[in-house]
Image 1 (cartoon, rainbow, N blue to C red):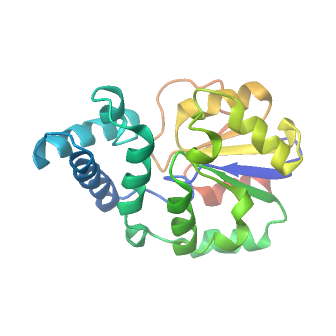
Image 2 (cartoon, rainbow, N blue to C red):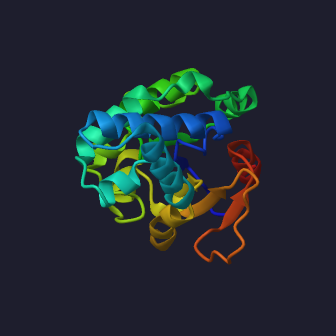
Length: 217
């Protein structure tokens, strides 16, 4: 493995693991938010659509953006504002690994900045991610990781690193195409949901964020 100086972290389901309670909460809140934004749909129908969207795309709100034309910015902020980070599970082992690490760390999430800050506080990793090292989707103009190299180029500039000196940690396969093509080391965090397909753009697969530090060691 190349000499790694920095890790670019996805947040959700990467630095912590989704559980059933949180997935259900995401789908319930998605339904409530879209109705608040004017979609004429009952609770059960909205939740069912959100659940299907989450299961197929990893994002409860995607269906309402792509098929119902709701306002992207308003939905993004409202959805993350109502999520409850307190139901997420902490890993004290991960905190200890961060404490022993001399690497630079940067968050690049498709969630909102406010959500990322709350989650990092809750899972006790906030000291390792100062404000300027947290990028919510709105901070990079909604140019998603699977659609553009924009945020990865931004990360290189912020960290003052070359691509080969950086590792990208993600739970979503499609978000690793661009960093791999740029020369970053790519790591998929799968939490036991191991992909069946060959993934030439993924250098390593691990069960959890903790294993990334072992990989580097």
